[in-house]
Structure formats: C-alpha cells, structure tokens
Amino acid sequence: MSTRLGEEIKDWVISILVAIVIAFFIRYFIVELYIVEGPSMQPTLENSERLVVNKFIYRFKQPEKGDVLVFKYPQDQSRDFIKRVIATAGDSIEIKENHVYVNGKLINEPYILDEPMKGSYPLAVVPEGHVFVMGDHRNNSEDSRFRDVGFVPLELIKGKAVLVFWPVSQFKALP
Image (cartoon, rainbow, N blue to C red; front, top):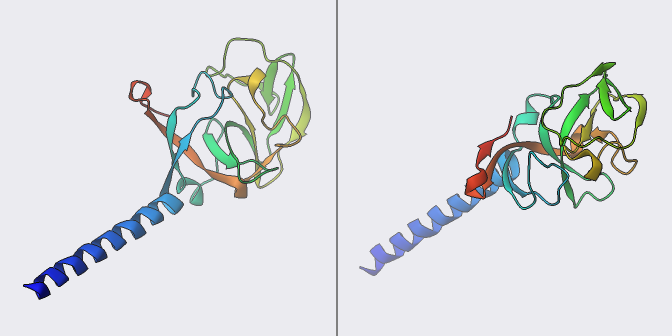
C-alpha cells in the first residue's frame, strides 16, 4: 500500500510541476494580466480595470494604428505604460490647432474625450522600428508627445490589450 501511495504522490508532484511550467510559459510568452493605472486612457479604459494582454501577436505582425498596447516606459523599463498607436513607421505625425494629423490627414478619433486637446507637436516622421502612441485622455496622458517617452521602439512593446475582464460589469473586448 505504501508503494501505491508513493506512486500517487509522485504523480501529483509531476502534475503540479507540469502545471507550473505551462503557467509560466503562458505568462511569459502568450498572455499577461495588466492593471490600468491612472486616467490616461479614459474613456476607453478606467483606472484599476484588469486587462488581458496578448504578448504573442506582435511576434507575427507589426502594431497597427488604433491598437491599444502595453509597453515598457523607455526611461524606466521596470514600469509599463498603456497607450493607443496613432502612427507607425514611415507615417508623418503632427498636432496642430487641437487636432492630430497623420500623413497630412485629420484622423477620426471617436474614442477620445470631447474636451479640446491642449498643445501641439511639430511635424515629424515615425522612424523605422518605432510607433507613436497617445493616451485617449489627451490632456492627462504622458505619451509620445513627451521627450521621456518619444517614439516607442518595437522591442519595448509587451503586447496588445485585447480584453477587459474586471470589473465584470466592464467586461469587453478591445478592438
């Protein structure tokens, strides 16, 4: 009977170790959970909402305009930021008269707050291997308009936010 008990314990230990290895694999290569901190993505995302971030998607394709992504803050890579991609490599970006222009065209942004955006940004071209990001709450967002963030290198991007799962009342898929 003790041999059977020993085999059962061994089976349990192996099963637990396999589950831990799979969990770590998923966490580091497939998806990550993220907590929104601050109001910079309102009204799309609220402070303290919990998200699922797809870490796998950008291994196969580049970020696209409109993607909401999590990236390492360039000045302190232990911190993560969440912002929306406004322009990608080769695009021109300019902010004037409270509006954002990409490649010379005013972009339609139904996701931003209705208050007028303050400030401007001189005409610039997004370099290869980078994206230009902004928060949806433009007047309360530290994003690519600021020198400490600037154009975000692709290697600092952790993944695409795909799902709000908490609080349950706010459950939604993100485009």
